[in-house]
Image 1: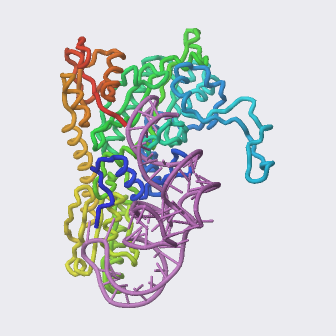
Image 2 (image 1 turned 90 degrees about the horizontal axis):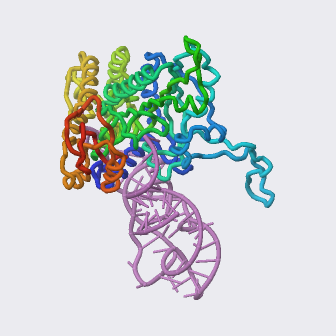
Length: 492
RNA sequence: CUGGAUGUGGCGCAGUUGGUAGCGCACCUGGUUAGGGACCAGGAGGUCGAAGGUUCAAGUCCUUUCAUCCAGACCA
């Protein structure tokens, strides 16, 4: 039978869509650029949430919630920030509908026009800082460390499932500090949390680095990022942490009385990751058979497929499965016994592979007689026949191996596609092949823009923890002096 | 918004020089099957994106419009 998913076909987004739909993660909604996240997909997001949330709390962050609607006037305070989002805001202008006087349907009641329009949050800096103003009076009130899990809306010109949807789910952390040093340390700490999460939970090797001024968040003095490489060699920004300086404090007049009695503006950070992480997960690990989930994130870690001909065999196999399931549950492993009796085993194998379940166990009369089971791993598609005795321990160990292997594979792929480049002509052809190029940059926005215009490549980051290369050199484009190499790539 | 493409059962598609819609998958019924996406037989399901026009006759030709996808601009 023809493969339904062909990850390495020319049209990358097509296979990506196929996996999203066929693996039952999400589907298109009736609203332009929005998604319905289906239960299986949402379960993955919930796992991401719970692991991240725990990590945030370990750094002293607390969860809070701020309103979805932001008065337009709040938006006019931080000029730079607004310029960055103004073009993609959904605006609420009325608060009531009425029956259409001409007959069918409903229309917006012109009488119900709002005094002041409301903006559906594209991000919450403005409303949060207007609230923080009332919370912060003294140095004793600091720091304030809040995070919120919510949805935001950005009316993008072009959308892609998970990577860029008009509405998306995310978390946004917003902190206020007494000193610049403390705020910068917080921004650095949080990007560290993201990097650890990406590597250990998502099995996604990422590069931590600073954004160039051009690529910074609107209103930030410094933006730290984790950059991941997808299987087509393109870069994906998977999370950011911003040092906002005193920009928002000054715009929203947030001052505190210091120990010496003087009034000081607070220093701010903000940081966020979104359901885009789901896109990263899909595009980093999937293969021709569908999704490949790292065990830590898999809603179902082990699926058990019974093979039988008679009711007696079925009962015997399912009975044995229940035993193994109980043993695995005791170890914290989530198991699904696929006892649907209208489907053949081969169909089930293919279906669970499509959904990325890390480990599959198959058991039939033949095995039962021999006291063995077949255990297959999703990442390598290898099958092994192991003894039923102690299979729970074997599987627990295998899950850890699968997690590690998925990471190692992604890391090896990335390392094979990161290379230095010192020649502009070579750069122009090499960058189109995908992968990251480590090149010298003179530090100017003009050069960065010229390179982008010529090749679509952008500076993904100035790395701080991998591929760091601080050496004298000459800019790949301008030939001017450079103090180190930065990461160039074509990005999603 | 600018280019290009596509709209036909739930999904994926075919439909010739106009002649009154067909295939695969999925679905329903019965049977045989079951260690990698089963097979046989039967069955149900579509005013062909929408509106208008040409014609004895439109899925097919013309006009308008809407939607989606791809490539840009924008962006997590």
